[in-house]
Image (cartoon, rainbow, N blue to C red; front, side):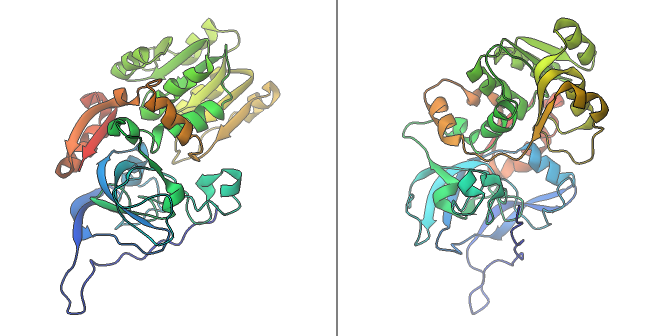
Length: 367
């Protein structure tokens, strides 16, 4: 992927007389372990294909925690975090055709110019002038306003009467779970699958895997509360890997293991579970963002005809998922456990970062 140029961080806009102009509040990354809710410059239209969006609701992703913990060195101090949210279009550039001031929109975590080689293959994650840039390489959505490059291809209109909170889940986690977990894992009717990790991404896999009617869905996690929630969302079996040996249990209850093992954490231990429970001819679909290497048991896997996939969401299934959510076929709003006002965003990070203690899944931050 061609990496976009990381923009130079600027001071708030000033007039020719040196007086400060428009500012807003945003959550700014200050380096590993440091975030601050503070006054920053309000973004403005920079290119004719941009839109300026007033944020109504946003959320926190595990990837944001990864940045905070120093897992993503490409995100430089001074960046406003966040890549998910819904809002109202405040202004559009002269070349934007699909949106206008006042439109109610979902912001995609992936920015797409729609014209490059990768976009033409629907590999929007690798857009040569986009990809995952919001809250990573450019300022993101955990602020009162956000600039959205290539607005025509990087936002979705919200249907009249739709639930905003449910649609925040369409910015990232639902398409990520569906595309990188379910579709890459080739889940099909009758399969036995295992989802390792019952966080928001794992739960999104659980919800969307049921489109394809697997016969058995194992969900594995250390958090008993999350496992109980998984049961309500359609898991047929749950395993607490802190009290049970997940590998032994699955191998004892299946014929040679599961058809699809889906890693939804991003840790060596969870990937290791996947490579020990997948059956011959099966798939390992890695969704988790790994900050360090894993021990790949290739000497055992090669002879078993295992397919291993991984990747960054393309969001090419978002329009379909929007229809399923709007129709009530799936209810991602049930993933939301906490609500915060914008000035409580630091507390929201504390809660989201301590899910076992706080019984947290997804949080909504209201602006």
